[in-house]
Every structure is written in structure tokens, then in C-alpha cells.
Image 1 (tube, rainbow, N blue to C red):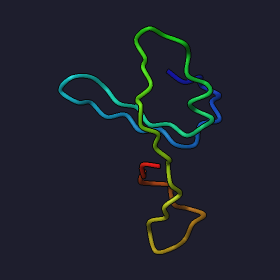
Image 2: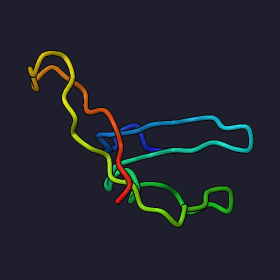
Image 3: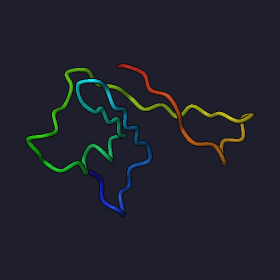
Length: 68
């Protein structure tokens, strides 16, 4: 879906029994191609910058999402 040189910092792919769900940050959303196979859900979700691993933010990856 996204370009090799994407500026997207958060990407999550989940397979469900009916289809697939992707969650991307705002930059990743802007880079998604127009396609009849991609639909945008009615709900908006925000990718959080939650730090794991003892509070050392420089080496940790962002995790978690919340509905806004």
C-alpha cells in the first residue's frame, strides 16, 4: 500500500474473518492510493505515541491506538 520512501511512522495490519484492517498515521493516510478495494471507516482513530521499555523513549517504538 505505502511507498518504500513513505513518511508514515505508524502502520498496523490486522486480518479479520471478513477482511483486513490497516491503521496508519496522518502521513500514511495521505499516501494511500485511491482504490475501489480500500474503504475508510466511519470512525476516526488516533495512533498514540505510547512508550514501552522502561521510559527510554529514544529506543522505543510507538504502540497503541485510541478512538477519537
